[in-house]
Amino acid sequence: MSRLPTPSSLSASSRLPTSPRFWRSPLRGPWFTSVLGVVLLGGITVLFVTGLFSYAAYNPDLSPVNDKTPDKGLLGFYLFAWPTDPPWLYRLNQGVHVTLGITLIPVLLAKLWSVIPRLFALPPARSLTHALERLSLLLLVGGALFEFVTGVLNVQLDYVFPGSFYPLHFYGAWVFFAAFAAHAVLRAPAAVRNLRRLRDETDGPRDRPDGSRDESIDPRDETGRAAEVSLVAPSPAEPTVTRRGALWLVGGGSLLLFGTTVGQSFDGLARWTALLAPRGGADPGSGPGGFQINKTAAARGIVAAETSADVWRLTVVGPAGTVRLSRAELLDLPLHSAALPIACVEGWSTSDQWWRGVRLRDLAALVGHDADAAPDVLVESLQRSGAFRRAALRADQVHDPRSLLALDVNGEPLTPDHGFPARIIVPAAPGVLNTKWVARLTFGEL
Image 1 (cartoon, rainbow, N blue to C red):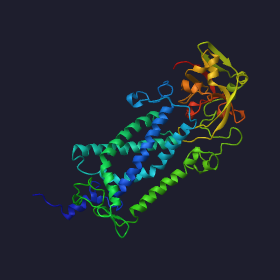
Image 2 (cartoon, rainbow, N blue to C red):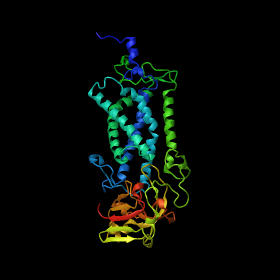
Image 3 (spheres, rainbow, N blue to C red):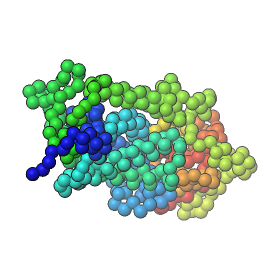
Image 4 (cartoon, one colour):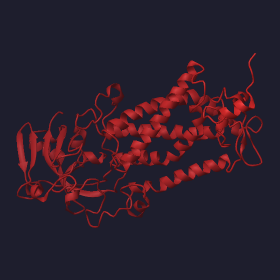
């Protein structure tokens, strides 16, 4: 015959996080957790899809110089070549990815807070299904914190983590989403039931006079043997806010982060609202070159002596040989214009700028390629450091008539910080593939 726990033993055990009596917030409960879970289910799915699109935009199967995720195996599946239309595609994709990720931070933290008692529940596993759920929960929590922290640090250009952001975020995303998918499958039925109870006035939870919710709990919670069954505190403290009030607080935090981030994807007054973004609010100056940048010429070691008219030459390589062109000689070639934005992986972008220069496919024709069947190209910069001092572009990008070796922007020669004496500009490409301070173009299969 089992013995019932004594009051003294209950008092001692309640001081441990493994006891459900340790967790006294009246806000926790299946309804509150399910609402947050549904929001994250939709939001994180969008984050994962836009993250895959961002990865695809680098054309990772084109050349090792573009892919910073070695030994990715089947995780690096590639379904299509990144298009050049619409030209604002990457700007939209990355703006959604970064802004939504930051906006979801309060929801994620609230969700983790709401389920934290389950992380300490004993026994660790009561069945195979329960063990899988607990494992998915641990991977989910760790993966979520890792992805959101590294993502925010990358947006802020603060690389305090070891290694390159690209493989860390890539592999972390797969671990996180695998755990997320497994957890969603295991918990979806319960989440749906809890949300249905909200609409059911007969069987569902009812509002107490204080505005909190009366949610049924497993009586075994009193003994601490089934803390994972229910999130409802068996001996809750006095409520200071209702669950609906808590959701409004979480939603308000998300709206605040949204309002102080989204402006980095726009120009004008909207950018000044992006207080939490490194490219928000900062005045890039006036004139034709008055738009945002990530890398300055000084930061990349570009000096005026190597970009002067007497020294700088563009080297173009193809099957017909090698051609070396000065900036003046490039200006004598047929010039074309294109209105294209700059969009970067950190989520910031500019509106369309007017670029003028030589079409990449015309440069390919100079060294023996058919302009109507231009090949891939390897672009090399004067900069001596940085992950993308060399970048590869696909044949469809080279062939697009808006893809230029730009010499001017907005009616004036490029400034040093915008890539003088020449830079690449390609529609719908990530900013790092729009190489600045171009020194060499090698056309051919990569």
